[in-house]
Image (cartoon, rainbow, N blue to C red; front, side):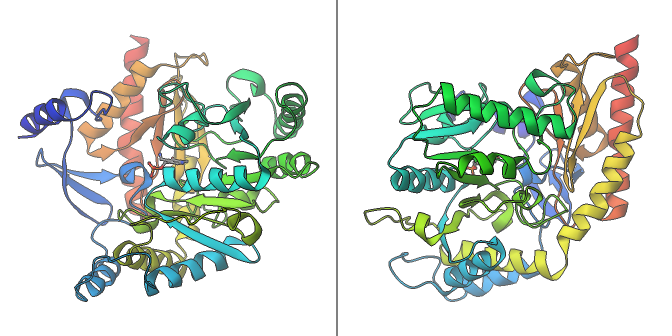
Amino acid sequence: MSDDLLARHKAVLPSWMPTYYGDDALEIVSGSGRRVTGGDGRTYLDFFGGVLTTMIGYDIPEINEAVQRQLATGVVHTSTLYLIKQQVELAEKIARVSGIPDARVFFTNSGTEANETALLMATNLRRSNQILAIKNSYHGRTFATMAITGHRSWSSSALTPLNVSWLASGDRLRGRMAGLDDAAVLDAAVDDLREVLATVTAGDVAALIAEPVQGVGGFVAGPDGLLGAYHKVLSETGILLIADEVQTGWGRTGEHFWGYQAHGVTPDLITFAKGIGNGFALGGVVGRAEVMNAVPAISFSTFGGNPVSAAAGNAVLDYVLDRDLQGNAARVGAILLDGLRGLDLPIVGEVRGKGLMIGVEIVHPGTTEPDPAATVRVFDECRAGGLLVGKGGLYGNVLRMGPALTLTEAEAREGLGILVDALSRVDTDSRI
Ligand code: PMP
């Protein structure tokens, strides 16, 4: 059945739209809690939540009821030209948790559009199209967001409306920051920023955009305080700071509601999307009124913040806050992190992450050389064992775990067991 669907997918969708698991591509046909059932008839524990799009799990009654209440009115959506109570309520809540005084919120249908909107406002306010971005970043799939995506596999156009300069990522395994401790990374990052500002740009940069933890890039993070250290330099000339919290927001990192809060700075603009609608298309940007209002014409999204998505968004945010899912992410994430860090397997080059955002670097044993082939083997072994995980990183050699924030301790231990078995098996094979 799935084979047939894969053939039809390949016949009618563009070639650059890949699916996981090659010829054994998976269709998810149902879900409950942290488990999904595939078109192959098997049930899997889901440690990836569809790239973190499932914030709180599958088939959650509170979300279903909120959406059904809206559907029962007979209105899926009319237009954002009318007042939408669900949207205003969600904006009020996000403004409140943003940490930004005098905050304004704009809703979109995706993270890409959220970042496009942030770029629009920053470039308008600063009258400049110069943007600083971080190598190994992912910010979206449109013309401008692709230009600030520092990841060759995902950035499919060299033509861009922006003038982009690149800063080093916080990767400690390779590159400029290899082997450095936190304090040294902070110093090196500030030097890097000053060097770029002095040598690459004409000095009228609009904004720096950064993910507090790089998602698609393989859950790479610089040390806490990095965005604050950048901001000190940026504020000398009024350059704006944009935090892309599409993967890190809503308590995902376990420590804070937003990733930026580990950095001792409040960004001018924050973008969010992915799991905030628990699968419903919803994203947006929150920022200071002065920056958010810096669009000289009417701007409008037909579907951004529609009543159904906003109803889901309200229910998800309430659920996350009322049940302290941030605290759960910290507790349950620690089980995974400790379990993985305790392994002594030469193919594991690094275990990193925060909360329920955990990456495992797979390398040629005893080196820092990426091993994407072994990564695929572990990835496939996980599925064979009944566990879905993600894959990513600049070299395609990072296993990514981003389960729903409701993951239980028992589920964490169950998934960890499958993952450890898969890693051990591939590790043994790599030495034969
Ligand atoms: N920013 C980040 C950090 C992301 O991870 C993604 C999606 N992977 C996006 C932006 C783009 O979001 P979307 O796919 O919803 O457009």
